[in-house]
Picture 1 (cartoon, rainbow, N blue to C red):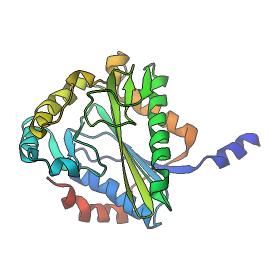
Picture 2 (cartoon, helix red, strand yellow):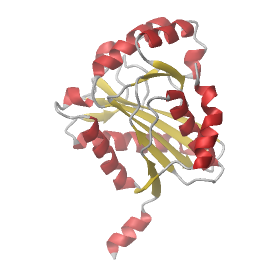
Picture 3 (cartoon, rainbow, N blue to C red):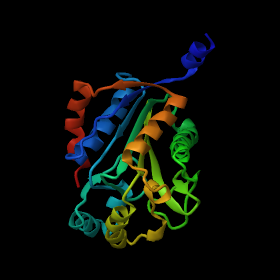
Length: 257
């Protein structure tokens, strides 16, 4: 009886595992469509956890930089598809060795809970990585790419995950990318892009879970994230509905570069 009462107190969260690695702009549009539909009350709180392909996610701030066009060219030359991301920050990388999370939640006053949502999400990611044996901590590493106070790092030395947020009337979106394996691929993509954008960055601050725990891979990190999420939410597997996919198709072009 106590267990049932405890479970009833944990907020529900729909979990969608569908990704679109061959259509990165559409994948971003899906996350935006979910945010809009959650905001209007058509959908409850929803989290996407999926496996992307090679894409370079630029922010609005990047787009206004003098070197943006050169950065886009550098991304494409490195084999990464450029897209315009939902959240703020600076350019971030997705590869087949990363996991992407996009959490949309209804919020009557989104601004008031900004810090609380950052703290919850970063704590969940750090907890998942700690469970795998990583000395995971929340906080910015000096010299990291796309710097942020809510990044998740290892040993205070290398960044493993970045977290960004976007708010609209009625809802908030938190997006995260966790580098499970392949830190060299992330560095290789970012070096020419950050040079073009004239951004200070120390490549040695970029790491992966595999670098910290040899043998850990995408499957293990994904399972750890779901297990940690289950401590804070009652997860229910769900699929993308036709209305969300239709809206995403309308929004896709806005995420092209």
